[in-house]
Length: 247
Image (tube, rainbow, N blue to C red; front, side, top):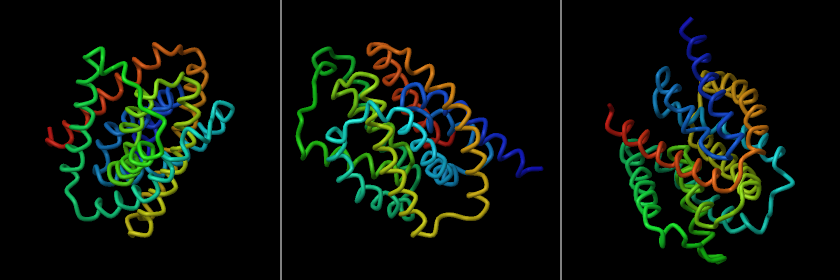
């Protein structure tokens, strides 16, 4: 009975997360995580999120494939692969609290910058070095705390992409970080049979959620999209801080 309840809560969390992720391309794990951590540990929730999130990203990349531009994410992918491996390695030895606080601080700094008009209007240059560094950070966060949407959301906002372009690029990039994170974690021996079973429940919930979310996403304009992404970055910072403090 306990296992059934666990699967139900994970599926419910990813159902809600799928709606949000399908509509905006970001926030699925942020929404799903609070419900998942009521029935499984934070470390297990990270691993389940990586597996379920991998399915979610494949689904989204197919849905938004016409808006994808390879040139936008090429440098991100180059940096993300070693970043995911580093994140999985750090997950084995570092404190989850320290990792969560690190990402929380990054989000808080960016959100604070958005309060200043000049900083908010800054646009990242089209640079290979900038892209690789951003990808390295995204990969590290993906492999360690499974919230790649946090640094990627910052990157997208600072590039000022339109909603369709952002969702198309993010969904395909998530596939690369998802595969890299899952492979790195599997090689590190972090997965168990029970976690794989729970992840299937998460995928089922995510499937139905994203069907609704993708339809909603096609009705969102750029201004609203940017506000939603910024809102979820703020929510992610709060969730990470609360979890890190153990409240």
